[in-house]
Length: 201
Image (cartoon, rainbow, N blue to C red; front, side, top):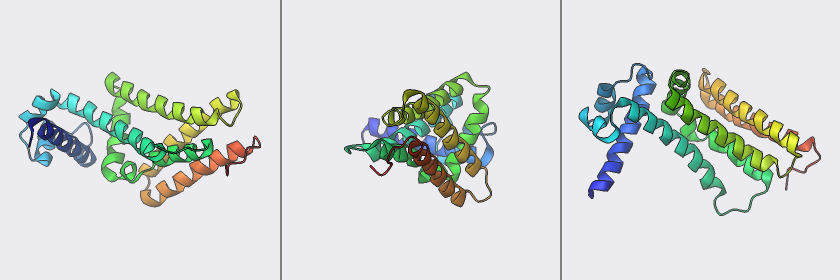
């Protein structure tokens, strides 16, 4: 196998092992040793590929952000969508099977807590928040007056984050995530209907 391809595989294996370690031990108690053991690799390879634990943690968060981005792009690519259809897909992209999985939910929760104290993680999380708001606002602006589009985007972003968080912390996350997605979609339909826009087209 070419060296470049092997590097990508090993990097992804280490990122997957980081997700598993954070789910098991939390971010604070995840170590180079816990990650390397789960990955079945020597601890030195983390420094080789990521310059240490912090570099790997940041790479793991960037991986999750990329998965969110791709989940939406995969849904809208090559399609001519009405604004409401695109808004539904934005919601769906935030509640994919991956984003509801145990390893990912535990890792997001740990990242959010640590971002309060880590400027680099906070910067990455801010990128995610701005992207979500921007995507929502772009679609709302096509069907709502400017001031209402701004408000609707802010409210919907808060609902997605809030319902996702509540579901991730629930004792019955699977059914709560399903309900959360439905509630976010219903909110969007209701907001648009308030302004006399037919959400079926």
